[in-house]
Image (cartoon, rainbow, N blue to C red; front, side):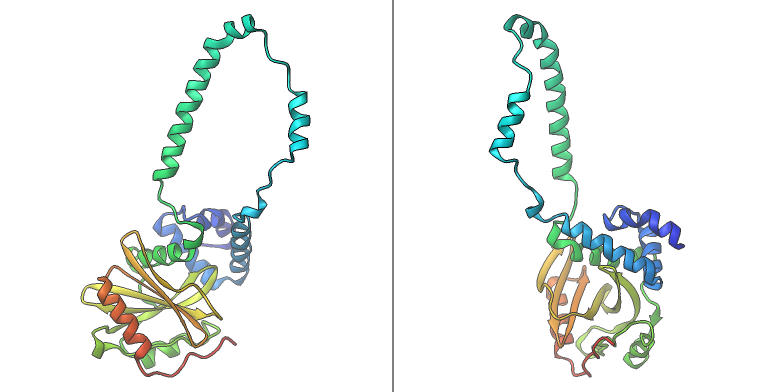
Amino acid sequence: MNCEEARVLLHAYLDDELDAAASLAMAQHLAGCAGCTQRYRGHARLQQALRDPALRVSAPAALRARLAARLPAPQPAARAARRWPALAAALAAALALTVTLATWQTLRPRAPAGDALVAEAVSGHVRALLAEHLLDVPSSDQHTVKPWFDGRLDYAPQVKDLVAEGFPLAGGRLDVLDGRRVAALVYRRHRHVINLYQWPAADGETGTRERDGYRVVQWNEDGMHYLAVSDAAAADLDAFVRAFRGASAAGAEPAR
């Protein structure tokens, strides 16, 4: 994918409307293109700002009164009666359309505004599995995976050996979340994959969420934000988080 194609698909990517292959191509392009990444971040900030309830302003009472005064006078009763059947049919059609649209909007799967990062992480997890692009550096050796990120990110991610705890390291890859390149470490639990995203952040939302059958756990530690996503059992993913947080390893280096 080149920059011109990325600009055409940018808004659809922001709204999570692309198929898995196109989303993966866009994510890979953003991971290597600073210009398109900057454009993506700008659009994402604008999209978030437009969701601010403070932007909704009610018209003052005086303005509403002036507009009402300029509206045409009511039709005489006889003339209005002749037009009633056509008006009733139009209103019935409009009501049916409104109900249909309201039902579609209610049933349509979409993430709440505060769940955007979780939705993006789950989409990235699924794309990596579907497109078989789970690993850029396949290795169970933390001393191979950690140096691979040097020069590819402006920070050094935490990479821990958790095989003794039942979570063998499979490797890692570059991914894109919230418009920036991030480290994605891949661990396994039996036949399940655990994607662990991490990036420098002073703070961030923490806690556990469920989305589309996947469990997501977020936490902050030592200037880094962590987000783990998997379809593994809740007890297994919680055990992974405890093991990762408790493992002895060098702290992540701050962003340069």
